[in-house]
Amino acid sequence: MTRTLNALFVTLNQNVLRELLGGMEETAARDMALFLAGGVGAVVNDWLIEGAEPLDPEELAGRLLHLESALASMPRIRDDGESTR
Image (cartoon, rainbow, N blue to C red; front, side):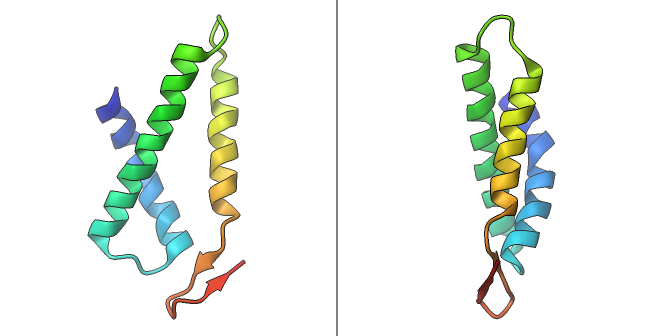
């Protein structure tokens, strides 16, 4: 499951991180994307193990979209190192 989640989210995470953090070095961008994918995996695991039966996929989707929204609202780092809102 971890391998599949990483494959699914790493590319998406790299694109989001490039937008949020600007000119990030490729290895660092991939590592950060893997880091975020691990967090997504933790949310999915929590939903699978602790979620009310029957599991509600819409609840999981809502949790993940909430996290995406929180990331998107973070200040961006410009190429000159300054942050923006």
